[in-house]
Image (cartoon, rainbow, N blue to C red; front, side, top):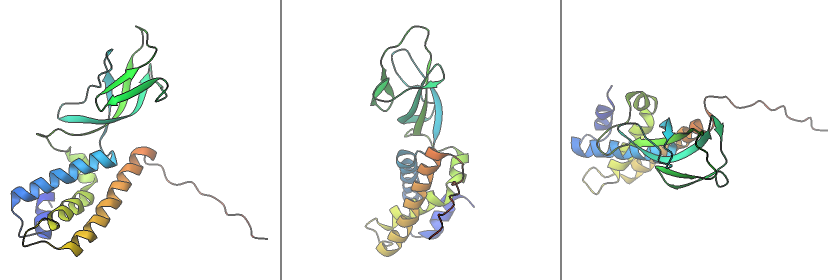
Length: 176
């Protein structure tokens, strides 16, 4: 089922434009706070990070010089979301960055990410709608959806930091 229709089922009194705005807000928060959309982007010699079309930079997660990771604060500084200042560079160096991005104001999240974070976006939009000062306002249900939205943001962030790996097994010590 479509994400828009699912949110409309949760809050049937809300107009479609308001539901679309709530979904855009949930996408923004998912990318801003959860680092859900990560791309590899080139860096120009002036330090500008080139985001893909339809996206805006949030933060550089890792900057690479000739394929090797650089140390933040020592090798480079990020002064704005789409620019870095690189210390000690030569003409032969090539720089790339692993960047968290968010949708530009006139574009949407890619369909793969919408499908992957379907429930998180649903709970975020429903949470936002249920807090509006309208006849459908329901603070208790909004708190319920906020809990699941926050958990989804945390899961997206953890996935961006640790990847798809599973937790390590630890053998407990014997009690003597």
